[in-house]
Image 1 (cartoon, helix red, strand yellow):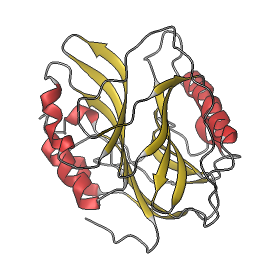
Image 2: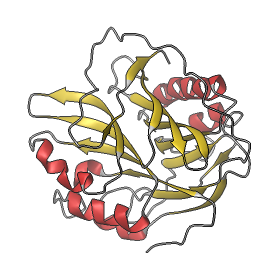
Image 3: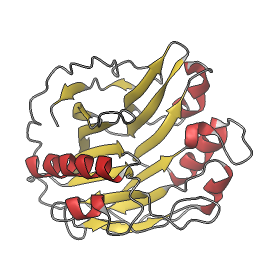
Length: 271
């Protein structure tokens, strides 16, 4: 399944790949990469990238996508690998920042923030994988909304697995004033999707030109991807500086590059 994108749009894709493990319990990033390549996204966010017990060489199929610019957020790092999410872009980034969204006693969470120099103007973009608990997501969504407000002069897109089980749940309520346009597609569980866990949010009315899922993805993950075509406003302003970075006292190393691509080195930023 592939849909022709509307003229003058950028294609975004977000997908929770479940560690590369499909319903057949096989680890297979080749089928992940093949489905991504079929949709040819300009910007790609992948959640649940997991090399634990396999080594970084297992990520070779993702390197083969040839999406040149790459930034990652490793939320779990152990001696035999790491786990987290990543952002791929066909265009260079002005800045990349990692924001710690972690809530005490819950799984660590990081947001990847970047300003992309696209062929149609600058784009402020944030890739996320939010927590499972309601109170956790509420705090994280408030931080995300603040990030969007801080860069109000630029069009903003936030995409990823928001784990928001309800159409008008905590995430949507916190973000709808600054990110009023969003996708509304069922993506989980992949075999019979009923929940809208994965979304793309846009800051300007009219940015979202089209959005769809790919049912064939059910063979590769427990989530369906969201593929969204967006239009940037014709009057998109020049990039403005992002909030000043800070050194995270937790000291988690998320800056290493092992999937190739250009070096879009992230800095820690105060959310």
